[in-house]
Length: 307
Length: 259
Image 1: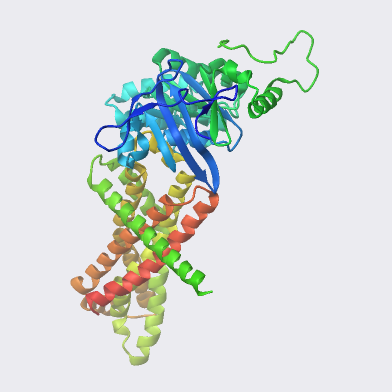
Image 2: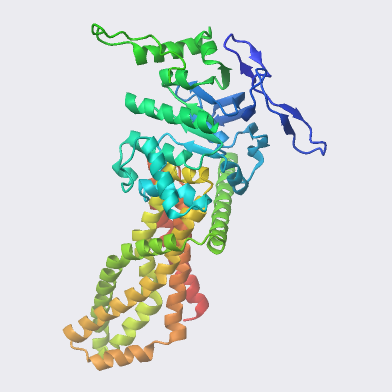
């Protein structure tokens, strides 16, 4: 069933739908207002998106919005379509039907060449990093700056080193991606994704395979980008603690549709799929396998806003 | 029973036409990327160097052995008629117009084109091409075109190298080993070869094979499935398709040029 489902199970069209009007010329409809009932201005919006893969409906009338200048975390079981959702927003995967609007522009109707101008606004961190194997880490991070800016070589070098330091990789300039661990690759890829300060950053599983220190480091980088530059972040994650600290809104994907709301709303949800997912993840993340050592007390959940 | 068979033929034909269409569109995008800015001179030189150097040893080794074998075989036949002096003409004819371009094409296909297809397919599998797209960099422009053009540049050069090394191999075996007069060998070679009919035909063939091999490798790699099976299929498909194309086009060019 299309629409956005609230944590209490109700559907709400205004929660994630744009108000459309006809352009008057009988052509494609254009969005004139992209805002939610709570006053969020959506920078990215999916409207009644349907997508099948291998005979299975990944999205069955999915409608959801991502507020401008905020962090939205997308949760869901493996295969729920989290990565597909990001690829769709990036124009890498086209839906079977429905609209994907970025700043009011329906990108499903654009050609590959036209999509490049939309992607100037976007940055994306892929799950595997997607760094170019043949270039060094420095060259990888410098690539968007060399291609799209007129910065001098020293300025590019300064910017690249600053970004690499921010993700905790100060001494990897001359290494090839193949010489880094999976977690380091992902951090370098994050530096590349944000080096041009794009308006919207899509981040696919930034915390998987990272140690707790680097989870916190990446979380800080993302939160800093959002707060300092007002970048709209759409993050898929299984890391509940980080999610709760970072997220302004959460989107839970299940059965081809979405459950959308505040992190607290989602935690209080009575929807079985949400409670099952959160309880499993919470147990996995926080419950100690051995008795807690004296003097060490583990919280059942990390407090929100602790970052 | 007949209906499913006819449907299957129809589906395969439609698929073949669609693939041909995709191939043509990709070719068009490569041509457009080659002539339009930005010109990636540094990347182009790197790719030419890679493709050329990758094939250098195998081309030289194969050239020398093919020339030597041809000389041995030709000497055996010609000596029956007391015509050993024409050994240079025999090997020259065979190498410059036919064996040179065809064998060079097949060698480069097996060595550099398969590597090119595997590299592009592996970039598809690891989302590197998608990563470029998300940076508003066209992968056709940045990755595929320099690699495909490199094939076109290196093929005539490697053909010339193959023929030169093969002639030297033939000369060494014929003159130094079998005792054919060196002057006669070179004179017959020089008299037998005409630039327009032989050398130019060989160069044109190698250029056409370069275009074919470059496009086939680009197409197979770029349209591969993003799996490890896709990478291996792209590599095998490149070698098979490009080899068959080389043999077919060799016949067509020879027939059109006139024997």
